[in-house]
Image 1 (cartoon, rainbow, N blue to C red):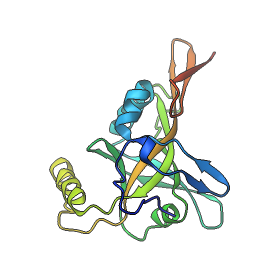
Image 2 (cartoon, one colour; image 1 turned 120 degrees about the horizontal axis):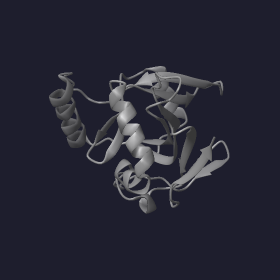
Image 3 (cartoon, one colour; image 1 turned 45 degrees about the vertical axis):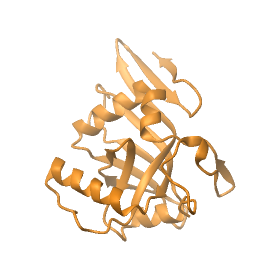
Image 4 (cartoon, rainbow, N blue to C red; image 1 turned 60 degrees about the vertical axis):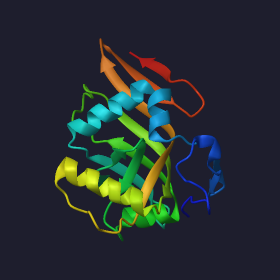
Length: 192
C-alpha cells in the first residue's frame, strides 16, 4: 500500500497528508525533510553528518512479506526539501515498501564507540509519479555523482515522510539519546 491521494499534491505540508493504517496501527502525523530539520535540528545534523561520512550509505529496514524484518543498503538523497528513497526497480526492499510503506533508516555506523554520533529516522514512503520532478532529480544526481539516470523512468520514486527520529551522541563521559516525534520538541535522555 503506497500513500498517494488521487488528484492531490503529495508534497504538501503534514496537515494535508492522509492518515495511514497498516496492521491496525494508524500513523497520522508525518513530516517532510525540510519540516524535520526545523523541528529536530540536532538529529537532522547528526543524520546529515553521518550520511556524508559513510559516502551517503544508510541501512534501510523494511518488513518482508512473511513479517520478518529486512535490512538493505541504500543511498537516500535529499532533494528539493524532501528525503528520497530511489533505486533499482524490482528489488526486494522496494517490493517490501510497496506492500508496507513503513521504514527505518539508520546511518551506517562504523565506530563501535559512536564517537561521531548515529541517527535513525522512522517513517513511511509515498510514491510521487511526477515526471518533471523525476527529471530534475536525475539531473541533480548526475551533476553530483556522474551517475546517469537522465531520461530513465524512475520507479519506484519514493518520498519519505518522517514519523519519528532518534540520535545517539557520546562525549564528556556520557551518552545523550535525542528523541523526536512530529508536533513535539526534541527530548534528550542522558545516560552516564
